[in-house]
Length: 59
Image (cartoon, rainbow, N blue to C red; front, top):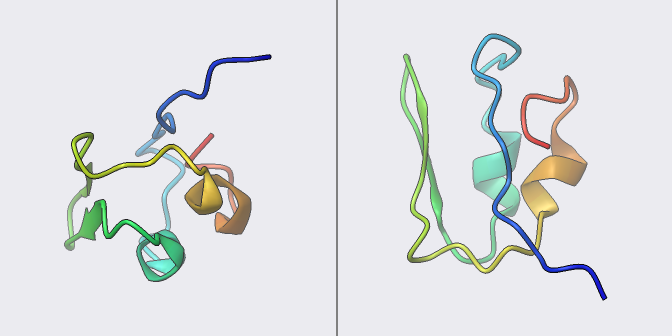
C-alpha cells in the first residue's frame, strides 16, 4: 500500500480560483492574492484539493 503524501503545489500554475480551499475537509488550505498555504498539521492527506484543481497546480 502506497503511503499518503501531502499535496505538491506548483504556484506558477495556480489561477487562485479557491476551489481547493472550498473542498478541503480539514480546513488546511488558506489562499490570499499572492499565495496558497498548506497547514501540514491540519492536512489529512485526502488529496481532495488535487482532484478539484482545474490546472494541476496541486498534485
